[in-house]
Image (cartoon, rainbow, N blue to C red; front, side, top):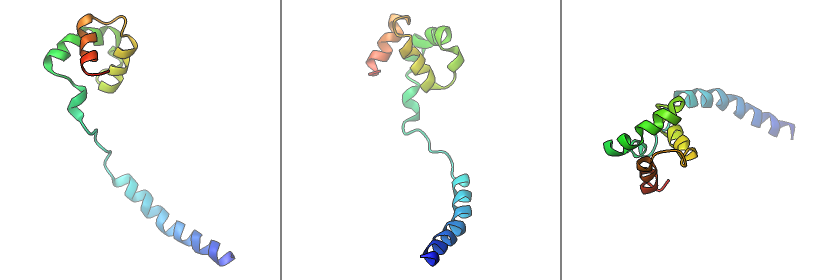
Length: 89
């Protein structure tokens, strides 16, 4: 049993540093649909005033801005609310 544990530890220490180095070298995974969150120029114009008014602290992160607009849905303009509704959010 002691030799089994020693073999497991030997494999762990042999692979551990190499696995950590490999993980550090990998690029972050891109979003599957990066343009999906940006919207059309018309949609951007419809929501830009609301984004600036309610969500300025989250710009330019589109996911956080979207979440902020959703949280402020009762306060945003009808045009921006229509954009969110048409996009299914």
